Length: 497
Image (cartoon, rainbow, N blue to C red):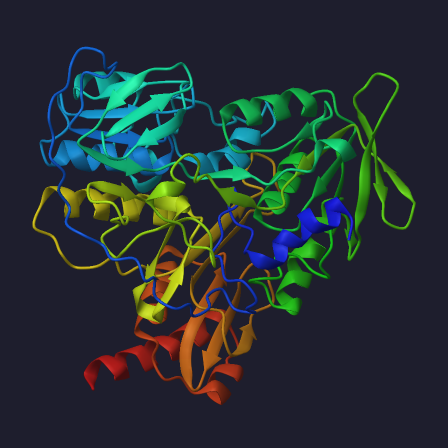
């Protein structure tokens, strides 16, 4: 198997979501798969905290967060809400910016320049959930120490000391690891690092891509998951020749049914996007100027491209924290239901963690902004208060594309639950369509495109309650609205029992 084929095959192990947003479930056709509970014993929350000498670079040493993404921003807000941030909390990040809502990078940030693209400070956390915009000034006002562009390179768990790339020594009492993921990359020897080849994980990546899009004529997107679909929609707005390449036979294979995928593929084709499905890539080729110029496929044919975006998933950014304990099945740092690692006083949250998915009795790693927010808040509340109930997360994924001005059709779908069992699809995709997953007579998951606020609000209630539903009755529904009413009636019956 070629190096690129191996890299692209990683899509079969994860649901491609926003920036690799994925619920990892190796060797399973569903979003989740049962895994044995971790054998790690999780000990008490507390570590002795001693203010050390001036040899340490951080003034705020009681609580330290490593990572500058969504989870860090929401954790910071929770510390502030508990009155435990001022003079106590330090955040150390490899990025140049205060925490921001990362999903914007493949949505509004990539809008054409004449269509009101999103820019910082507009999408700092926590605006994505309706909260306050936490600009760099906000962190200063709250007494939170920020260390930018200086990733942590090592940890001494016994001495409770972190070392950064610039050789700073940082002391911590309690540590929260919120390092997220890094993009899966093509190997350099087959062109993965050529100028014009892009990966998207941060603002700098997105800015680099925009610079290419401004000059681009032929865009190739590798990967048929969330990043591929969202970047392709943006490229349509730029009026660029756009092709999506992936090894599977359909878009978003880990979530979409074949018929649902076909609906979205047809919508993209109507906008001029071309698809090459079920293909492998041998290498990326450079032109005479050293920039990428073509994609060479496994069958020997080539496809011209002056800009290539690789969206083949992501890997948990566990380094240098392997010592706290990893999960070798789903990847990431193993934690318990309160986000404690195997080492007292060290916690981990967000995309980087393998945690107990309580409602399905599984261990999972979820790459999604909703989980990043909720896990961070739950962890900090457990750390600072008497909260002892375990995290009870309901898997949730969504996408919003074609939302720029002048777009003939906006796409916004949400999914809640588990995609196991048989499916019932209702609606004509004009614009609504709904897919229900039913297993042993129970409604396990539901996806809705272009729903109303009230309809979207119903989805998590259905997925969490898993009511018994009459499949035959659901199949006879003449509209999405009728199907949702049938499911809602089943829910009300369950609640009365």
